[in-house]
Figure 1 (cartoon, rainbow, N blue to C red):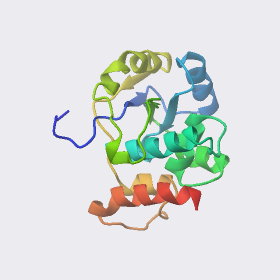
Figure 2: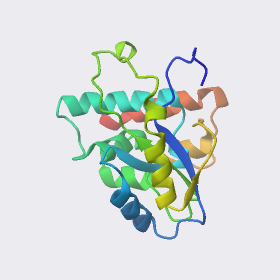
Figure 3: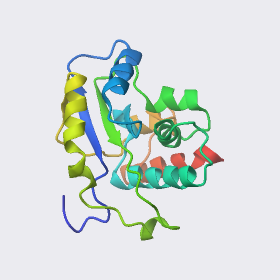
Figure 4: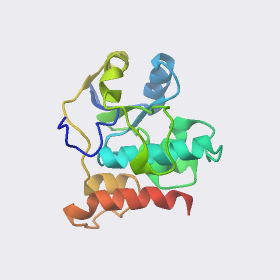
Length: 189
């Protein structure tokens, strides 16, 4: 990654499954069995827009977690809830979780370091991605999936998946990331 990028890579690894998912619950159960702790999660591939999107959502989750004001009981579910832009956990899993027919997903790790009062002041360890790479590789192997060489990118398909826009609705490519961020902030309104 470029040392001048405003934020380091979020600890997220895109994976491609060997076959289309037939039973998402089986995949999630297998993942839960092997994940090092409950700060690891699986998320729909289209649900991630960018490093800024993931870090901003993480910051909001950490703030809610530290204030003991999460809607979900677990941090991984709270992250999906904010990504999906809803207060309802079931809707969050429907939008940002795995679905029948998915061929790809994200393995994410939600770091637990302390945050400052404002996002721009939080010190993000630049090696957080590399320090968790081995665990991500192990998890992908347990899922019979391959880590892909790419990073998240905003697109209309993802906005439809998380419920930010309707099928067939168009949005300017340079406004996609903003739409993801705005949708996430709407989760608590």
